[in-house]
Image (cartoon, rainbow, N blue to C red):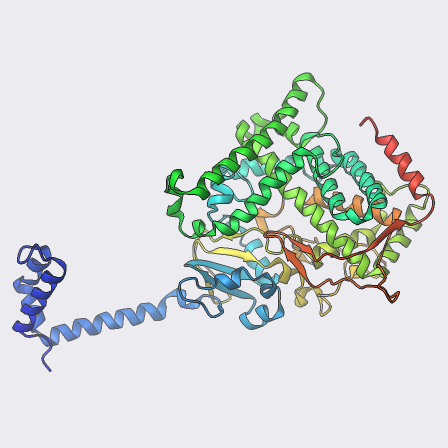
Length: 557
């Protein structure tokens, strides 16, 4: 067989020139190259051409067989172009045993070319994100959520670096295990108001949880006065801005996959105009709150707060006003929703598992009695009450996927390749329900798993940093406000258990209605329980008067 002949070579040259270079026939660079004597000689030598082709084929096969990309973790079938986008957005599937069972403890998803590694077991997530935290402390690029809405200054979404370390150090010092004691009076007051509101209007418990979460975090961050309801302007303004962000994340996700779109002029991109407008609104809200604290410091009237700590120590952390303003604002966003969502799941657990509620109340009666409300000083003597909080955070993590990490360099885990730049996600839901760590009953709600035989609180498994769950994340990016969150949840739930009985409602046949604990509403980053009914009543006659006396004591604070 003749591979090339002069006549065919001439035809090839002519076709190339006419097809792609019609105005440059015999003058184009392509034509000049094809006319070179050395190329003519090469193409006429069939043995040489065949040898080169074989070498190229061999090199291609060798490169393919030795490429680390062939060793990516198992992956579900992909759809052309979009890849595994549908699986990445399907929380119900990602939380299912089918996901982990079919695609191993570590899974690879390709979403429009963006490589995502998901850790479906606590062992794999801990070994990679915790023990190798130096390689996984980065963040993927977030164009809307970070670069526009926070001008690149949001500490949660910020990539690892010097500025992140300074912001993190400032936040840690303000909400460290020692510093949070300054906020106990605020947390105690808000818990008391919450219990009173639940007894007065039990059907609006969702609104009460939101008010309590917002009021407590605003007071802690800015020494803001107690909110009377979740409809106050400051809360409505922030919620409106955050709700837009959640909706926009779904509509503008294409921008995250095609970053060049950030350079489109505003007049041609409605999404960009609106995002910039919302960013300005968000900063204005946070700045007004921050300026209140600055004014109080100037007059000598400030009380302990997160923002006051930043202002008094800004030289130590070398932070600008804008950086401090965004830091306080993002702490609000992280703390408010996490607290209120966890209280929703906690209440559902009390309705679904009344035996847990009764045991916790028996412990409170034994330690606290019925003549006063529980306090933070009682916490060491209330291991079961604290175990219930731990179990809620394990059983129904408010942020079931955490915040994405990014691999700084290529890495390997148990023979699987993790490429540099890959988005790495801990499937917090699967990790918290890992049977290898929590036993065959990992899907059950059982606070006893956190107690020893004597009923004392156990340190959690080492893979959970002794928390008993991994809902606060891993490594250097673990939630900086975890001590604050634990304290808020303890005092709120302890006072609710002491003062109220939370019961199932009855149907038309006078039978108790057991709420559904397996379904949820996907709120984007967070998940909420499916709506359910319950009754909330005082646990004993003196509750109302004791609560009233306690609230009187807080007046004027």
